[in-house]
Length: 297
Image 1: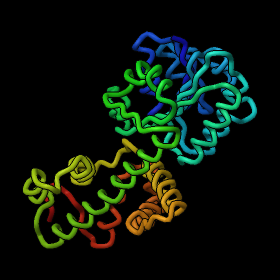
Image 2 (image 1 turned 30 degrees about the horizontal axis):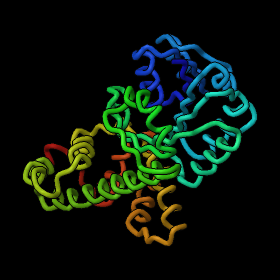
Image 3 (image 1 turned 120 degrees about the vertical axis):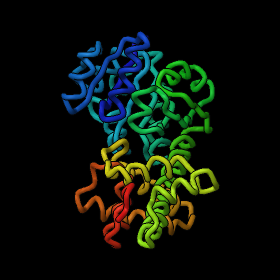
């Protein structure tokens, strides 16, 4: 199949490579040349813009940072819809605001282009290994039709409902990860300050109700002092902001998310924006002067 892929960042590049490995013809574009060059070296065909990608593709996949980028790429001048043709379909795999998804989907539908949303979870490792978790929204028939493509990039696919349901589900996911990461940091810093090594506490509680993937993954990053981004802090700030806006628009109280947002923004302002979102744990370390190392002194 001829597939277009727009957005070749940390996540998009390995996702696109997996489509190539599966034997699909891939037409790619990104405003940053480096990603395009890497995909061309892997066998993709570079196009000069979003419109041109659409003209050459049966399915166009977008993997972009936030709502404004999706609107520009799909709806803007020289965008995907300008290159539309009979039978073309869109899969937006970006994590954006649910209302923006509905807006873009409606505009696509009005010109006869069906759109599926499929935000992802699993970070760079999941993208590389093709083990992402996908949360899909759109017409069920379209979801069923496009599932074979989605399976190439994922190990778990969930149909969540109509357009907007996928990104709403993703926001729930991001809210929980953000708040839980901060909770792990706060609790473990308390333990370390009291003189108990983080690894000892971790081994004692990991098999109980407090055990989780966040505990396993984010705490390990802190203990190893390795905050290389699997999912950048600034992107998590973006997702949490979308969650807060959605919650507030619905009249849902979001006090925990609001507190963690302030902590994340503080760390970003202090140079950690391109680190993994686990960097929010250093907020608590800075306050107490304690580091969550494997051999706490």
